[in-house]
Structures are given as C-alpha cells and as structure tokens.
Length: 196
Image 1 (cartoon, one colour):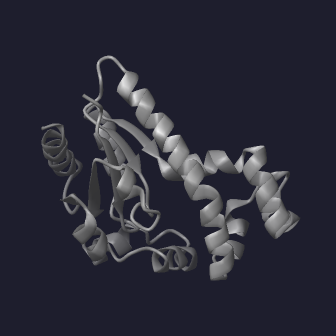
Image 2 (spheres, one colour):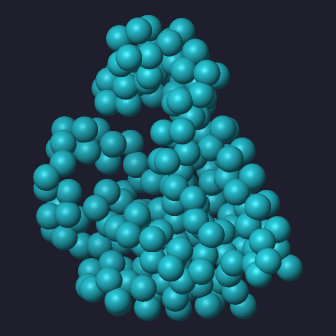
Image 3 (tube, helix red, strand yellow):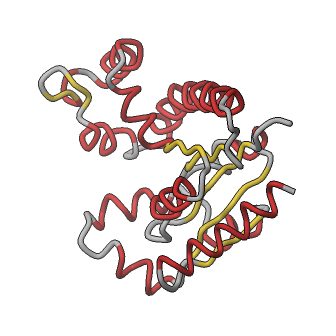
C-alpha cells in the first residue's frame, strides 16, 4: 500500500511549521514547500529565468534576494502569476520525488506530508490523499507574527485564501490554540485516521 501524500496548510501564524515538526516526530516523512522554493532560487534554471524577468536588482551577490524579488513580484498580478507559474510546477515535481522516496522507505512512514501555504491556491490538493488545515484564533495568530515584517505579511495574506475557507476545503482541521502537547495529540489522531 502506498504511503498517503498529505498536504498541510494554514494561515499566517496558525502554526504550520510547528505542526510539520510534530508530524515528523510522529514518524511522518515531511517536506516544506517554502524550503523547496528557497532551494530552487539557488538553481541556475530558476535564477536565469528570474534575472531575465526582473533584472539584477533582485539579486544580491549573485543569489536571488528573496525579499527584493517578493517586493517586485507581488507589486502586480502579472509578475506574481509569472513567478507562480515558474515555481509551482517545480515544487510539484519535487513533492512527487519526495513522495516516491517515502514510499520506498522500509519501514514506510505513516504519511508523506508536504507543508504548503498556498496548497489550495496552487491546486496541490488534487495530488494529495488528504489535506490538513492548521487553524488558530485571529488574535493568537496576530500575536505569533507580531515581530515580523507586517507589510510583507499583509501582502502574503492577501493572496491566500482566508483561514476559514482553507478549513472548509481541508479533509481535516487541526486547531492550534493550546500547548504543543495538545497539538501533537490532535495531529496523532489525524495521522491515525489517514492510515485507516
């Protein structure tokens, strides 16, 4: 039986990365789409395409400056869509490789989980056996991201589906409003259901 491929998503400050870490501790194979994108920016293929589109001003010392690129790409829809069309298929390809590797492990993990903030926006649910939305109270989410660049976060949040919509679309919803132990227990319950 194949290892289930699970998409993990949620709004800013909901605790996706924390949930991914807990799922890894529970035995799941895990992959962060954000980390994949970070790696892709270091490849010649992506760097050359970004340079051709945006020029040297989004580079720092020969490497893509993610902050500068984000400011440029998210300033207008055409540039954002171009960047998404460049990256999303490559992330999907990497996710498929990750899933194949997880299926070849012995013993097999209970699930192969890909954390993707834009899971539904990118159509990643179509490749997943199940999806998990991590949600939290808006006040709690705001407190968690209080020390970060608010303008950049607001721009990112604006292009994402609202948290409530992600919860409606997800196979499982995990509320992250308590302790780490409570989150882990809720995720363990979801993993058990996915394995059935």
